[in-house]
Structures are given as structure tokens and as C-alpha cells.
Amino acid sequence: MLKRLTEQKLEEILEAGISEFGERGLEQTSMNRIAARAEISVGVLYKYYENKDFFFLACVRKSLGELEKALSEIEHEEDNPLQYAERLISTLQKHCQEHPSHIRMYHELTCAGSGRFSPILAQEIEGMTAHLYSAVFEKARCNEMLRPDTDPQLFAFFFDNLLMMLQFTYCCSYYRERFRLYYNTTPENADVQIRNELLKFLKHSFTLKE
Image 1 (cartoon, rainbow, N blue to C red):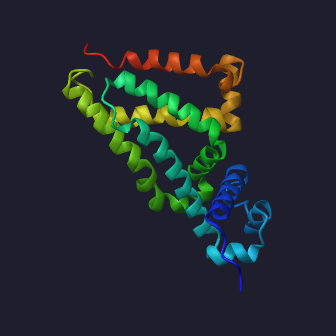
Image 2 (image 1 turned 90 degrees about the horizontal axis):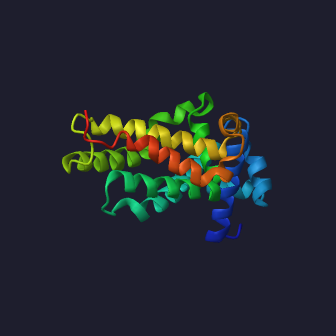
């Protein structure tokens, strides 16, 4: 009879899976490699997860939980949208540097190899930020902190696209090299500059002028 794993070990297994999926992608990652990385037998891994797809979904949901935890610290604070954006950018910069494999795995979800999961995970992952950002910008418009002809839902969509690309820039090799072409350094070495310039870019949108 197999001994039940501790919660800490189960967390380590999920982190091992996140790292493998982030580095190799869904199709190129095997349960054997994940088990070896987690220092368990593949039989133990299959005891807890029926197959690779189930394990992949568990890894994505763990990653989503970490992001929700980070965002929850700023979700209910009342400030103008630019102040909210500043806290959000800082939070995501920190999250990227603490959990780069999570962002790489999220990037994998946008690739063809994991497209079959889109119907399952799109609402689960994107719904959280879509609702949050739309509510923030709707309130800002009502409080005359956002230009009155703004569509809050589309504004939230474009805003989230910027933040998504920012996360990929910190964690995905192609986007890191792309950043270097523009700024000749790594994102980590330009944390403050990135935040300040992105806020300047956004400030022109947070205006009452039509």
C-alpha cells in the first residue's frame, strides 16, 4: 500500500509539473519526466492523477490560485484607475519574478498544442481579470476619472493585453529577446523604468478629454 503524500509534497509535484510544462510545452512533457523531477515514482503520480491532461489542468489551477492570491491584495482598494494600474503592474512584476514557470505555462495555453483546453480554461482564467478590470473601469467612468466615451469592457480587454505581454516579457525567452531589441537589457534590470513608462502610456487614456 502506497503511503499518502503530504500536502507539501503534493505542492512540490505540482511545481515540478508547472516547470516541465513551462519549459517543454504540453505535448513534449511526459509523466515520467515530471515524476523524476519531483523525485517520486511515476506510479505514485498516476495514483493522484489519472493522466497527463488531468495533471496539466491541476497545474494550471494551482498557478491560477497563486495569481488570484496576489491580485486579491489590491482588488478592494479604492483609488483612481491610474493608482490601481500602478499597484497592479508592481504586483505582476513581482509575481513574474517569483513564479516564472507559471507564466511560461500560461503562455503554453495560448499555443496550438493545448488548444483543446481553451473551452475549459478560458472562462476560468480570463474571467477573473475580465470581470475585475471591467468593474474598475466602469466605476472610474462613472466617477469621471475615465473619459466618458470609453467602453469599459473593451478598455479592460486592451489593458489586460498589455499586462499579458508584460508578463511574457519577463518570463518567455522570445519576448525577453524582443524587449532587449528595444531597451538593450533584461526586464529585471528595468523594473522601475518599465512601470513608469507604462503608466505614462496609460495616463493618456485616463483622461476626460475626447
